[in-house]
Length: 158
Image (cartoon, rainbow, N blue to C red):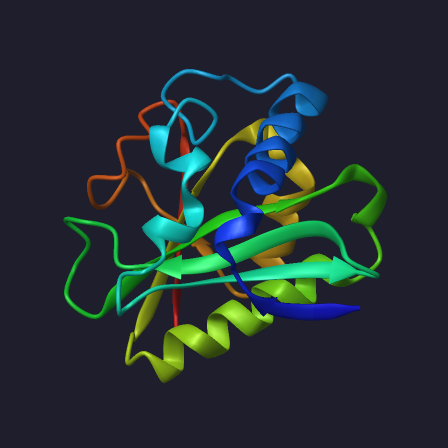
């Protein structure tokens, strides 16, 4: 198992993994990362100096990703945990926790003091993981992600 930075050749595979998660969970497609045009160009999106996208792979097969991004409109010192998706066969084995912890470590290294996340109730296993990791629920969204379909907002102090 290898966790590495995103490559420009990862774009189509990662977009497929992300969109498959929405189908598997019957989650809303509009107003979410599913319909976000940046989902097809993650390598380019993560060229921002205050961002990083980690990709998990095994024997050359991409299994998922998770990253940190300074979403527009977030409070100073706050970044968003983004694009956290795994292939179905990779879930429940601790890989998601490893990816999330790697991203949280990156947020600290990049100088952020808080991490924000937006999600959906359809991803209840992920919500439970966030809560175990110390994320707390918020009453309303922060920043300008454009993901108006999300209705769970959480934050964690680093």
